[in-house]
Amino acid sequence: MAVLVDGELMLYGFVGDNYWDEGFTDTDVIYALAELGRNADVTVRINSGGGYTDHGIAIYNALAAHQGEVSVIIDAMAASCGSLIAMAGDTITMRAGSEMMIHGPSGFAFGKAQDLEAYAEHARNLGRGMAEIYAEQSGEDVEDLLKEMEGEIWLTPDEAVERGFATDAVKAKSTSVAAYDFRQYANAPKRLVAMAKKKKWSFDAKAQKAASAAKPKPKPKAKDKEKPTMAKPTAPAVPEAAPNTAAVVSADDVKARIKAITEDEAAQGCEGLAKHLAFDTDMSAADAIEALKAAAGDTPAPVVDDPANPKDYQARRTAASQLAQPGVGTVPSKQPTNQIDTASIYAARRAQKGA
Image (tube, rainbow, N blue to C red; front, side, top):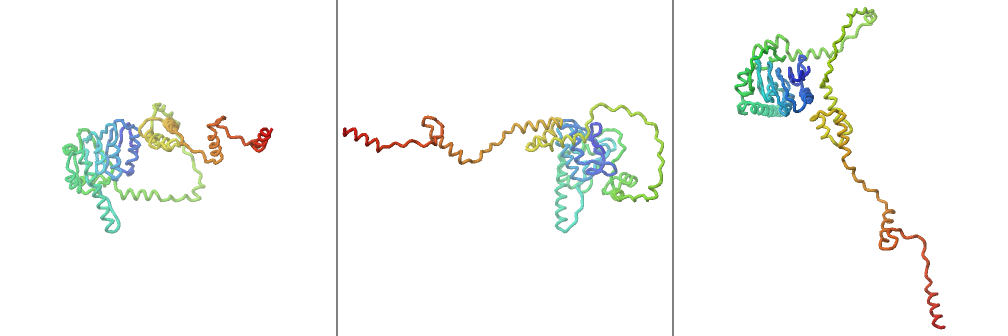
């Protein structure tokens, strides 16, 4: 189901999966918030019987970190990690007839004794973390909450406000309840258990339905294929209404924009800037990529030393040795110099003296 509807986050159904055609995941919420913008005020409407704890914690943290104001409205049910998500609201409003249920995490483990002990320790740590979130909102003591969370805490709107788990309760009509197998809870109200049984909200039935749907359908027999079929008469075409010309940005558009920016070649070496442009700005993918290319162009090219060349090096040394002589910087000529005949000079001088 769609999470972002008319500018509001509709967190209806199972947390972390799509059961009974109702459900939402942490990724659904992240993309919906990205589509709204980091600074936009957001209304979060909850009608959930709970689900996977890790998805609930991730959604709580995403909403708590959102820079705009978060207004949580519990339309009918906020149970288990559905109530944990509600704690992220700056305001938490419970409508008439709605309920909140708080309890510790539950699950199962398989293995040897040390495996079971390790899982028990994990569950205790997870439960303490959840109790700290509830305590931060309500102001109650963590240890006292941990004791209560060993069972189930069912609260009406007035009780939730009185204990600090909600900020206000309104007298608005609310008759629907999120689809959930409430029979797995120990102290669920009888009307919810009866409703789950009547509407067949059963995890076992859901699993059996999914398994049967996965079985391959039998192929039609050859004789069936040969039978001619008559085309049904079609009703005259009805002109479609003129499309809305207002720009609509879908979740798929947001995903495509984020992917285009973060996976472009220009993002290599500039991953931090790419994530900032993708998630923290409203720049188009083309403009963001141009900005990444410009940032990459401002980076000075690395200095690469020329490869060693012994001949050029010796030539430079030879040229430097002539710097103090006329013809600065020239390389000495390789032409042979004329040799002076000193013996002939001395013989000529002795002949002159004898004369």
